[in-house]
Length: 274
Image (tube, rainbow, N blue to C red; front, side, top):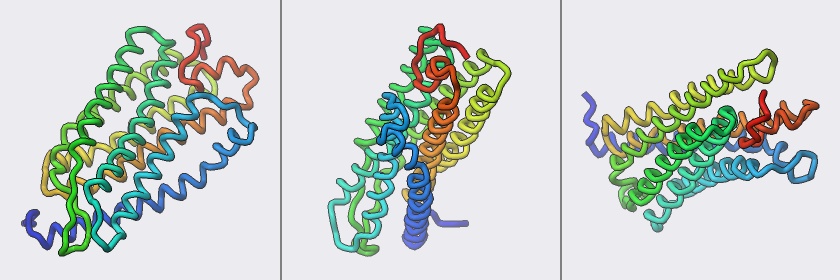
């Protein structure tokens, strides 16, 4: 059996974490650049600026910032403030996840026509997640390891509760969104696209977050706890921003812009129905 606490194995697993971060950084850099045209359309006035666009941009920038910070930290060979580096990475990562969840909350509320019960439930679920995220940020710790010449994370098991809450709250919001979609079931390409997005989002949340939760529950060692955190962040960020972008692009050629804006904006008048 593998000795998960053997120093040699721990070192190899930290190396796997570093490689995973570099891989996801490359994948997300391509994703960020390939979607930059959409932002340029807004900046140049070709597309209308909506306030939810700021959440979209925040999600992309924070995710990219977290990955850049992680890659820079892993490639420094001289001792530096590991605690500050870890805090920056965690703050940017959880901000990216928070913005992704906010896009989901707004879409859920829109599909339920801002019904009070669903709106309160969705917002309360979101802020429950935010509360645990703030706690997780405070629990992020790292130290310099002179043997490996790099920063290593400490006490990662403290993030287990936050990983579980993130998965549960995302799934609750996703199922609420799917129920809202079914309420508005109509013939046409728009409903099919939105329904497909909901299914893909649930699949992405499960694929991206369940491995993190399982490894935290097993608590094999610190690097194994961290192994799938970066792919989870990138998966949720890409999923949220791509779906926002796809819906906005679908809406642009539609003549009845007020009908679409109730969903595209995220919070529209209850009388605007699909």
